Amino acid sequence: MDIQITATKTEGAERRLQVAVPPARVAEARNKAVGRVAKQVRIPGFRPGKAPAAMIRKQYASVIDQEAVEALLREAFEAVLEKEKLQLVTQPHAHDVKFGEDDGLSFELHCEVRPEIKLARLEGFRVMRPKDVVTDEQVQEQLDQMREQRATWTPVEGKPLEGDLVTVMLATADEDGSIPEGKEYRLVMGAGQAIPAIEEVVMSLGQGETVERPVKWPEDFPDEAQRGKTKAVRATLTEVKRKSLPALDDAFAREMGDFDSLDAFLQVVRKDMTESAVREADAAARTQLLDEIVAANPFDLPPSWIKQMIQAYAEAYRIPQEEIVKFADEIKGMAERQVRRDVILDTLAEEQKLAATEADVDDKVQELAGKRGVEAGQLYASLQKAGRLRELERSITEERVFSWLLGKNLVEQA
View (cartoon, rainbow, N blue to C red):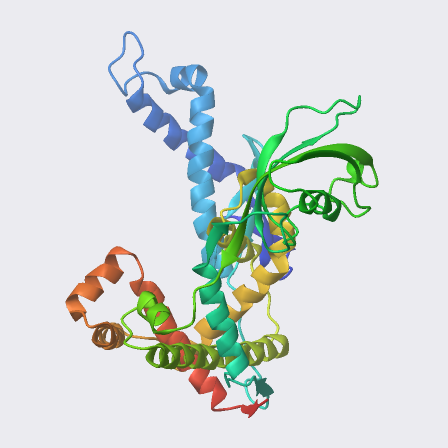
């Protein structure tokens, strides 16, 4: 196709090209469009496709122009890609389209191209791997959390103490000073679920008691309009419950799973925590190394790749549509870093031939099935149905790439 191409922007991964199609080519496209339209429409007194071209042009001028423009744009897109050797990452868009008999067709083509990735420096980095030792204090903290999750709340008499769960009717005076009917709240004292001054009022009450007192809202209250204001508050305490933690004994171990004794349960808890600590330490070292490589090997990124990553985050976090713009601004930097990491991992997997194969995935499924005590075929079908085989393949590839990188750099134990 005989066209003129002038680059108007070549920054980063973005390209803008001014494209001009000569009038002769436009006239040819119009003639072809007339023929196509003539076969599609019915003109009284003429068989389909036999009406005079002049009549078709006059009655269906806008349709002919639209068909001609669409055909020319498609041909021009293909011609530009071939002449400019562009490797697009998104569908190109035509802007400022101008179309006429004398002027031909002109438009500006906006597109994004695949960046050229040159990983010049992959060695010579030094990263610190965090400690993966699990202490007795950490194990005890984990056990305390488990006990907290299985705590029971028992009704008690008297005034509430810090940590008690109270049921209370609260009402705050309106602007005119009147106090409306209260609403029921369940609050844990000392947990920051109410402002401290209201907690003081509640903790001064016995069950069934009601009191009205002036309460000053704190200066750092989230609602600026309420900061520092003093309002009357009416509180009625209806119930107090106190938390009781289960004993850490054999019975607790049996409740947590198929354990004969507390010692057996503690061994599993420590083992799980140790394995988790090792994974976290490995992940931290890998993240450090990859961040170093990203910083040492800059390259341009197509904006659409970052937008796709932001959209993926938004879907994962279930961000409401009305908050997408704000969310995108806040997370743009993290999204860009993640895209750069992914691009580097993919590039190395391709260059070093480290990408996982179908056989690798099958072997991994077999390994996982053995650990879980299920049939490999059953697990494979389950992963396939859940759409997680691609995720498994990705994890195998990343594991190989990181092993390759760690072998070429220094990893020190903190």
